Image 1: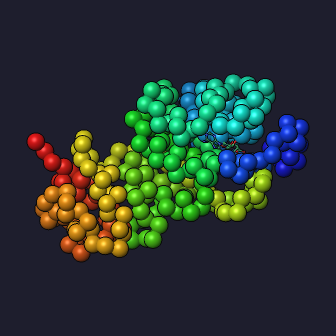
Image 2: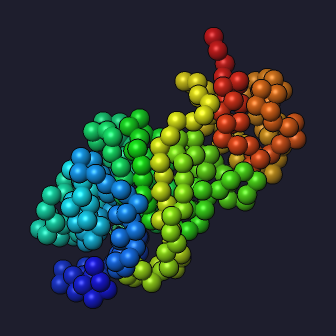
Image 3: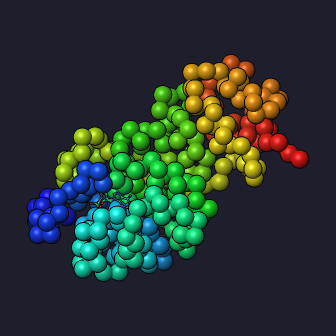
Length: 270
Ligand code: SAM
């Protein structure tokens, strides 16, 4: 969709873009092309789109996937989509709440392709990564800052709990940087297309291991030595030795596999 088309549609349906709902509509054909290219859809695949908006991306997805499910919160946009975009299974509601529901299931395997609303991109990601039926790939436009956090490596200032939770299950690549002018209205921040591909961790995480609690405790006070922060979880010295972690290490120094070994070692077995 071009800027003129988006403006015309918004005027025709009397829709004023809502900042609270992160309504920055894609108006750049090149970015749309890259999103679709990265999604690498085959005709037998199911796609989940969050925030279809005026359907610019949805139309391309419908043309390429077997099934497209889209969650949109804005009633006015839902009405527009029902009337103008065929072939999409539209769910009207808050994607954050819907993704929390264990009985909300999309027949696996599926991919998520979405130009996410910035204000909820982190909670959406957390919920997708934590779902029992995780998507096998995600192609997302995100705020540059969030993209950097997802793709960060140990010892970098952007490396944090969100990085570790995501990279536990996904290989993350920043595929393309996007300038604000590719959206209408233009956001105040830069964006990026991020590709997340599901893969099993190299070290198996034991069921019930306190992975999330450890990572949260470690990054909660990231300047403090991890050994002190994790003392309450059990025999930290043995766990540090098993994971080859130095006694003076801070959370930001640990690779994903080391977090897994720590969690497995500090897992109280009965
Ligand atoms: N996909 C369209 C595009 O690329 O032009 C619109 C993207 S716009 C950045 C984000 C969309 O997410 C808007 O349509 C907005 O109404 C919708 N949205 C915002 N919060 C939402 C929520 N909690 N659940 C579902 N959709 C939401």
